[in-house]
Every structure is written in C-alpha cells, then in structure tokens.
Length: 107
Length: 117
Image (cartoon, rainbow over all chains, first blue to last red; front, side, top):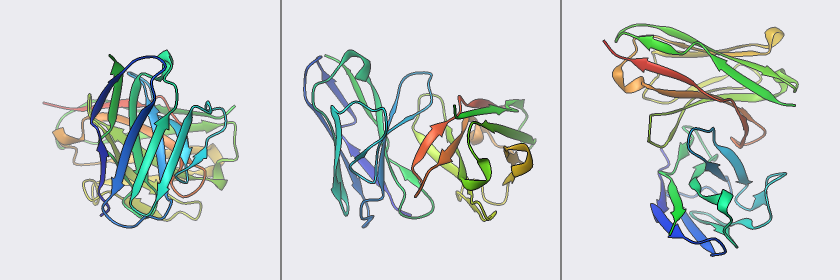
C-alpha cells in the first residue's frame, strides 16, 4: 500500500499569511494526487486534483504543485474561511490512501 | 445540482449488521465510479470501498470479507452492506462521487455508524 505523510501536522497562521503544506507518498504516484479541505462537522471539499489543477469554484489563492512523491499545497493569502484541516490523497492505485491531515488554525 | 444523501447509520452491537444507502441526484449516476470513505470522530479519512461503472468492487483490507458495496443504477443508489461489525468500524461514513482517477468531487453529509454493546 502507498503511505501518505503530511507536514506539518498543524500550523498556526494569521489572515494574510502564506501557508505551505507538504505531502509525501511512499512510492511514485506521478501526479495522481488530490487535496481536500475539511471544516469541523462538514464533509471534505475537493480543492486540487491531478496535483495542480484547481477545482471549479475554488479560489485562486489555492495552488498545488509536485509530482512523483513530493507535493505541496499553498494558500497564498490566508483568509478567515480557510481555517480548516487539509488532507492529501493518492489516486494512483488501490487502496486509495489519505494523508493524516494538516490543521490550519488561528495564531 | 449534484446531491448525495446517506442514510442507514445507527447504533449496532458488535457482530451486528447494517446497510447504508447513498441516494444520488443531479447527475447521470451510472456513468460514475462511487466510493465509501469513513472518518472516526476527530480522526483522519479512510477509504473503505469503491465500485466502478462496470460493477468491479474494491475494498480496504480492514473491511474485506465483511463489507459489500453495490449499486442500483435504476434507483440512483449506492449501498454498503456491513456485516460482523466491530468497535473499530465506528465512524461517519461518507459516499463520494469520483470524476476521474479517485478525485472525489462531491460528498454526502455522512451517516454515523456506532458499534457498541
């Protein structure tokens, strides 16, 4: 199985900050990588697919990059509504696996 | 508008069974791969099972042999039959639509399964 790791596990930031979250796969997954945002009590929301493609309706301050085993989600200027937990997930092969999540909270 | 609505969760004793249903609307259901993903309270996301448009089924090792995924395209419905439930199966169960390569673009609100005596 492909293991997914994320760092950091949590980050404290202020509105307007630039936030970067890293995701690493235990083996090569090309660009079969997705990022989700989840707020408390809500279902996850798709932000980025194919490592760098922005899902329709998602603000352009979100961006993704990477390929192979190392990936990054960047929020260019953090907004109040961005405080949430972010998960990466590989879509390369079964069983599909998620990273443990990165919680972005208010500094 | 795409909608996924799960139902069927509840409290069940260890060893018991439940059937979850996901009612889909707003899209052509039989054209999409569908998934079940679960989340223990306060924990991360865990993929559970998938079913393709051709009816091929895939399962996480943790549920293989106990859970069965199925779909009824005529009713725009996805199911998860859960048998021999364990305390470790306690979680919110989400159904999700796959728009390609396990990119899950729409999720239901989830249904809570609690396994306890």
